[in-house]
Length: 440
Image (cartoon, rainbow, N blue to C red; front, top):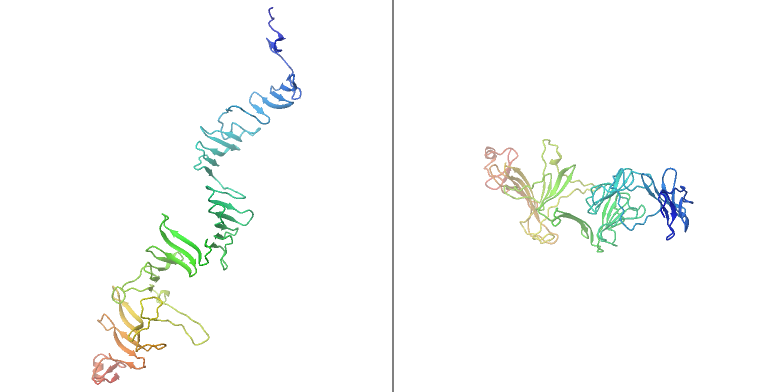
């Protein structure tokens, strides 16, 4: 039997509805779809007046299809890949609701990114680097901006860590997993190394408190200053039972400065220099140097570089003392007894001759007899250098007995001869008989 041009019938073999032309049904609603299923009357398809087609499941609208978009309600489970356009930061391919400038997009091959407000915020490169506020991450995690972590951050392989203590106590940094915190910064900015209670006695505004990691009470904290290769120790500052130690292990000096200028130094030979960075080695008309050197130069006679003072105050008669002491040993700290004729101390007055310093006058204290327990007989000897001479000559001595000796006084026959020889009134001379006279 021939069928008419337009027909609609039910296939008796499988119950399917067959139409040669179009089939019109009501648009329906979510609760009553225009096309529904026999076993589930509230599941099927509906279409509203604007042409939006919906897929209904159990009376709930799950998918809507319009001429410009497909919208899903609820979760989606896929058994195959989902492909979508690359998109841009301003127009991401996947976005929530109607917020079309916030979502996920792909800036290029093997790249994925997240934008908010049309600006890229998170970027994942093809190499697996993640950038936050940067589209060119150079590290596994590259953050352009600050990071806030309330309870702590652990970095590295589990053996190095940065921990932030909960609350307002401060910031802890530890160098090994589960170890005692090594560095602590409290809210005042004080830094503790080896202690969580950084403090220094005294009214200091900022504190760096370094404690030793050993339980040995003889050793405290230490600071090492090394060269850039990390293997050569240039200097170290540490404390132990003997006190504060400052060392320079290389052939260099230790400098002290104020107002951005050097004021003193200990050079590599152990000489203490004040007012100069170069030690002199031209005393006594030769290459002798000195362990302590102070130097100043100024056009003013009142310059502070000209003066050295030692001030002492007391309600009694005592005054300041400069001590010159001598023992007969090559070892520091010894007290080997001295011998007659030994210099106990010398004050030398020297002047520059254009090349080096030459002794012009001196006062020497010498042992004047045999020393014993609490017994040190001594004399004072006075020297001056004559015109044309390269060294000084003894002129007078005060012996241990109190006797004053002028053995080197010039010899003249009488007062007239002394004056003719160049002496002036008040000078001392001796006669050929050994008598001391004063010119008049």
